[in-house]
Image 1 (cartoon, rainbow, N blue to C red):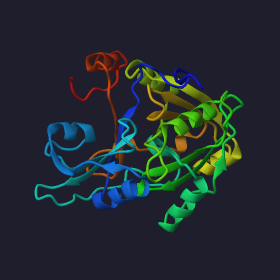
Image 2: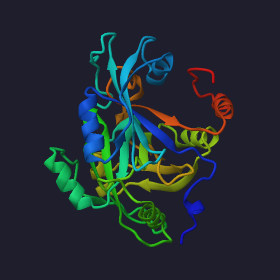
Image 3: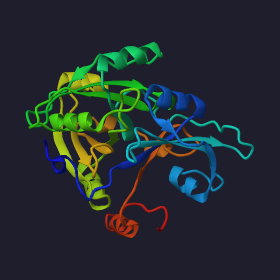
Length: 310
């Protein structure tokens, strides 16, 4: 059996939860719970200064909030927020992600491992989802292996990526991940928690420094994507070159795929200025750390912009 420490960073913090803002909490719950197999916690009205800081909203920011988990995992969860006014009515906002492509800098998509890609595509097409392309095989490298992926726009413009781990060679990263998932199991709908979230960055070195020093994560896969089929899959320019580094915490799920546009950055939209309350989409990431003071001072040393003290 593959040594699990080869594919995890023992001291690293995986993604605990992706923070998503939605215009329709009930509709989002139907998508993530009924169709992707997540389990919903109680829905509550969240009124707290922390919420305003987390979501970049005004001091009186409030939201209907629900934390979703999959299969009992405490990583790769989803925190759904529907921003409301004092009377509890939904507050309108803009979409963070305005275009159905990967030409953007910021928090980009959510990835889930699918037990049966063909069945998943047929089922979600039946729900009215339109996939960007047919399933695409990524030939990353001999050491990495081959994933098969499809993308589509989920609720509130959040891009959803289904991944099938095609390689079963235990000497490859994909093969190791596949063995892990087969041992771990999937939820009632055949999916996993959020296994990877895509973060498109301007500087790979700066992003890696942050995730390594503040969160203890380590690189798992490091490749350059430039094949025509990969660019078509992501709706990138035909000659696009993208540096991709997967960062790993102490769990196989909750990874981060850091992507740096190498020759098309000037064509990319900036998501961060719109990633705030009450706009809808992918707003923030939550990580659990062993020592919040150590993480805070690591951020200070990296000159990361701080919003609060511990």
